[in-house]
Length: 87
Image 1 (cartoon, helix red, strand yellow):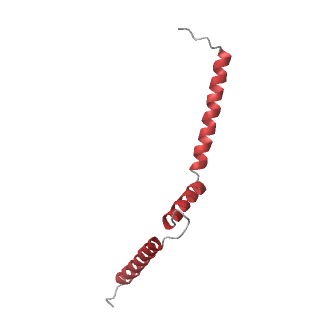
Image 2 (cartoon, rainbow, N blue to C red):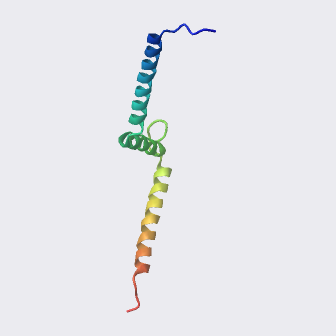
C-alpha cells in the first residue's frame, strides 16, 4: 500500500491540524478563565435557589440562611471562648 500524498499535501494537513489545535486550545482557555468559571458557578448557584420556571425555592433559601447563621454563631462563640478569662 503506497502513500500517494505529496509533501505539499502533507504540509497542508499539518497546518490544518495545527490551526485546529490552536482553536481548541483557545476555546479551552476561554472556558477555564476565572471570569468564565465564576459565571458558570454563579449560574449553578442561582439554579440551586430557583426552580425550572425561574421562581425562588424558599426551602433552599431558608436552609442556606440557617447554615450561614450557624456558621456565624459558631465563629462568634469560638472567638469569645478563645479569650483568656483568667485575669
